[in-house]
Image (tube, rainbow, N blue to C red; front, side, top):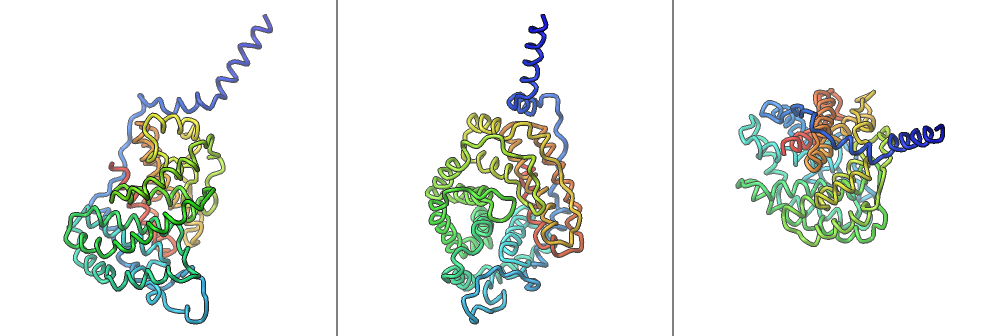
Length: 366
């Protein structure tokens, strides 16, 4: 009798520690009600537009991140990057422009709509594109902004290419050579990248693939789309049990686990994705909670507000594939946690966080 009791006890222990069983509890959401997501309404759009409107022409302070070949390289940000010289660094300037385009598309009656169009008209010129591209031709800076800035450039190009607006269509044509160039950089780089970069900051490979896939899908760039799908499956298809308990890192603004889940939902069909996510992120709901920021004046520590936003957009995407209200509610928690903290009075966060908030709010609607 004692042996039978011990056998039953062991079976119970195994069942309780089975990751598959834990994940199944995540997917059982029939009794969970979906909470209301924060809305990107006109009032919210007005507030968020102000951040990018102010910073795309704010040249200093500026972090150039350039490799200096000789004394001739010592130029002002505007001389080096006549289109994307504001917002502290090149990639933030790019997604600052994306923010304004995105908000104008959704709310053409923004109070600053005319002023925003005037600013963008000065930035989106053929001459500026030519000068911007010359920077990448320099032998010392060919890999500039790989792949985080590249991804945001393609996200901006995607936003313009899908906008039925006279200004948007004209700006899209201006930006085509830039987008084509960056797409070419991806085509050149990805076949040489044997192993993905799995960190929570700029060079995260999954993030770089995700925005590039969105662009390729929107403009029917089949070569780039097919390459990204092949690379994503090569990098991630056999991954299991992502170490979510290791997150977050102290300077993270991207989740290595959730960014991987975000690209894979794009390249796998529904059934394959559900099977893959079961193995990759078991017991997801217990491993991701909104994170706090101890010092918003610190440019690295304030990354964690961005992490709340990027986790939110990944979780919204996950919820759409799993039809899981619990995932959607967790996304809401992350988004809401940092949404009212963007206006901290600290440029360290204000120059970029609004873009992350806008994208998360956009994903909550779809």
